[in-house]
Image 1: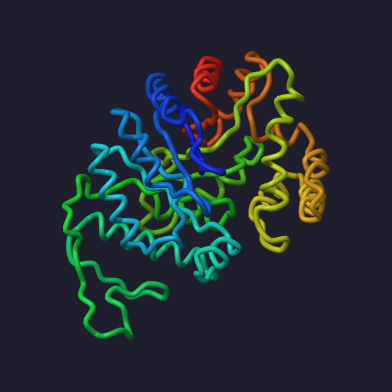
Image 2: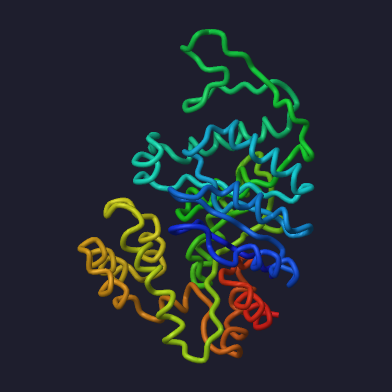
Length: 341
């Protein structure tokens, strides 16, 4: 199983020590480094800035939000960064949720799967540069219909370094996971658990079985963000992760539409997820955090002494996951890498 380093998105400002951690990840033999975006820092700029100090490690976005850019704009950034990195770029895309899509970007959210299919198709056409890009879809038209009538089908001026750039899709629901398997080169799960492996295998196999699917499970990448904390006290380690889980389960989305909440409900924690959401949305964040059992943390993380982490890693190695995406500073990465290898 490969290791990746996930920087995430910024909070109030640039994370201290990020460049040192990226360079350390490459020195440790990590396969990839990833950035993200929400509604603050973007994913491309930090990846290019910090990635310029590396030479081997893959550079990925986990994720670029599709509603933030037209498909051609995303393809332009992908082409550019792939050239600058010498062919090391991986484009991770995601639909986000209606609160961000409609509240921040001012874009419609309905039919995210159909929209994603069109988006990926256009990105691939731009990168391939085989002919002027045209698309007549429900969500995107190139050239635009109903405008001045002067729109012209174009090819990118930049010749691609690679005519195909790997595209991974962030997905949590079974239909979106199946779509990732059908049209993409990898899947970016969040809050994966070995106990959910059979469920996700089924969703992936559904996508692989569709006509014109690009891959099978044997050559498909699954890069999962997994908290790993090597610490003698399991409860203390869990306490560092619980606040983030409370945020995602309880507050990262509307009460009626929270995909993260649904993941834990499917995992067997429906009552816990409901309680956490109720407390969090009521402003009782500390109580929401306290309502999360350590078992839930252990199902989606690797925490505890080295021997425990190594023993539980065996469960992850039997799943569909091909890469563990870790977080932390340079010293943490070294410590965790030593425990996992």
